[in-house]
Length: 194
Length: 275
Image (cartoon, rainbow over all chains, first blue to last red; front, top):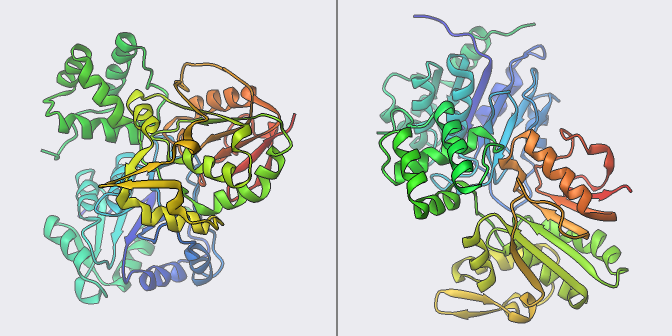
């Protein structure tokens, strides 16, 4: 099987995913240069300290909520802002969207996975973690259609199984892995230019 | 099927060109990623079979084109959306506006009016509403009709009340509207000073001078070039030391007029004309 090299790593999660995200971020070496984009469902209109928490968990790495038209840069972990959809344009700059929630979700994992895989194609790695709804399943399908790589957290390791299960149901060829295996794949299969 | 999208970059460009020639609406400066998605969604809704099919229908049926304008421009809005923004408006901007005998305010891209009504409530509570002339403009006539009616679904009012309270509102929010069946009607006295009018940020020009321009989450749908055009228009439309407010994730950092503004509040995205 052909191994992909990745230019972008997308991590989507909902209920029960924060611990796994923290684990993955903590385990990335300081020299890790591939941009990571995290899309998690968050409460709207309540001030959220998620970015600060992730910065702490990840050992003071750069975690930022991108603003509209901000260029995607290496070495940075991006967190989708609450209450917006997060897209990317062809010139690799972020683009925000305040249209209706999709599957009751804004940010929508489906939408981000679709948008980034449209631009990054086969160099996309998308990871879908624990969650209690169906968001992400369509997005994983789009990633696979564009020859990207999709990893789904194995339901038996997920705190909430609905999201990984729905994605697996729709995408039989996606790779199912535990958080440890996902981390290994991120670290050893990436086009990490250091 | 959704397996492959109907419209791609090339077809989109052709469609936008044709629409510009036919109707004078120019969408070519919109950010492609999100526009392409909404155009594809629209194509599915009206059951177009191909890019050519969609183009043909749009050019030959003006009612479908009106529907298209409504679908591809995003019209999602709330009363007192982002309460902290309104809190900072109350604290940092209204006291400055209070020094003007007449306060000209422009809501550019007002959609169905929710942000304008929120502003009117702030002005009313600060005792400034009678001195304010508020221009609310949008590209989409259907939005303006809805905004003029002052009617919105009652089911959102619980959430809006919470927003209002978080923004520092101390009154009984229910006093600002009348509930009737499934709708809420915003009080006439709040709305009577608003001048609604169609204005296209892509092609129209300066029409007045303002102490405050609010354009929140409108330019996120534009590409960088068009954003620069609109920001220049705003700068030219602002009085000296006038305020400009943007959406919470919008920035002047990537624009070419960044140095013409001071930042009043970096989180609430409130800027002030330096000149």
